[in-house]
Length: 126
Length: 121
Image (cartoon, rainbow over all chains, first blue to last red; front, side, top):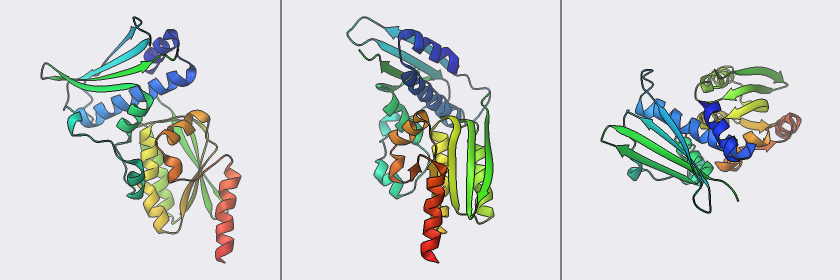
């Protein structure tokens, strides 16, 4: 899975460092699905779709990840203030913070009331 | 399959954890075990050497957060060293340099611990 996405990102023109960021964002997204949507149930299926958009000024690399587990209500999510996070010595919840920092767009969705989606987009630097 | 291992060395009063390979959600429990062992042995001065670590995800950073409170409560610390730029970037993106001292070389981290011990005695 890692190789599939990183090869596609490389072919699209990303540098090794950008490819690494995309890989990590996808790892974080899938880890959250395994942990929170599927609660480590090994039968859970994760589908990954990669596409590209070249029709505007900023070419986009789009990764969509689908699962059929418990959905994540992103409307109730607020990103932690990292200063507070460290002061209170919290742990967990870093994956989503990282995804948002690594990618240009992160969007959660629900399809047909039964599937969850995450859409991760990275713009190709000019 | 992701490969990861932790080696543990003692340098004076300090435990050095050598990380190797891929540290992600799948392999993070290995690192947890290594930290638990240090706490069980009451070794609270810990340096984590990242020189052979090629990949880290938030699960790895989560392990550091999990143990920092106990370690500092016991007058110890977790200091980090020898990160590749790829690994350092992940720490930096999340603001970890606010909470952890990160050194280029393991020796510098060890020296910092030893200086502190000398000042106390």
